[in-house]
Length: 204
Ligand SMILES: C[S@@+](CC[C@H](N)C(=O)[O-])C[C@H]1O[C@@H](n2cnc3c(N)ncnc32)[C@H](O)[C@@H]1O
Figure (cartoon, protein in one colour):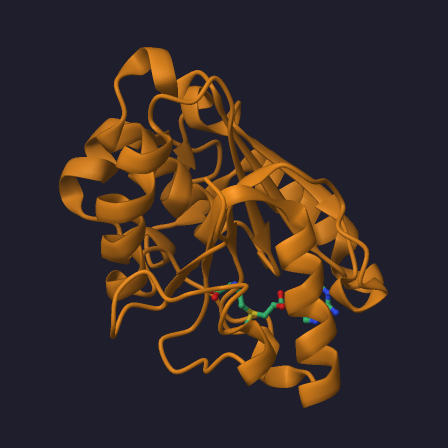
């Protein structure tokens, strides 16, 4: 259930890069919540995306909150994300230009470590989405991929309500490409553009 990889969903990343990054680039605080982050490949992909598209000054304002729930995996996920060291096979999906810019040799043979400049912008905390209480509010972007499908329709509604609560007005929500929102969310989370897995809370 914890399968993940770098640059896993190019359509969502393209949408975030082209629609979210420009919309938040002038903000004094750019807050991203990656809900169900597993071992960190996704939050570090987001860090790479923002770093490659933002000038250094706004990039300083980026704070990525990476959360996952498993008690047994907590230490493993927390440690993995803190160390941010990945195998050659893991970084295979990272475009070479980004490997060159944002990775350095790891401590173990044939591993690659995310550079400090990006690590400084990713925080991990344990959080169970099914508590339905957001870990923090005022988010500019919530990313939740390959997680909601495991929940019942009733729990999905409550989790989406939590995401809505966690987002600032005008904040974005990135879901799976095939994730349809329940009818009660049509006005609360209009789709940014037909076909894009990206929604926006009104009221920017
Ligand atoms: C398939 S992985 C997806 C990882 C990443 N989002 C991606 O798309 O590559 C699903 C993740 O959701 C997490 N997860 C499942 N139920 C959860 C819950 N109730 N609260 C928080 N995380 C949960 C699992 O621990 C796992 O790491």
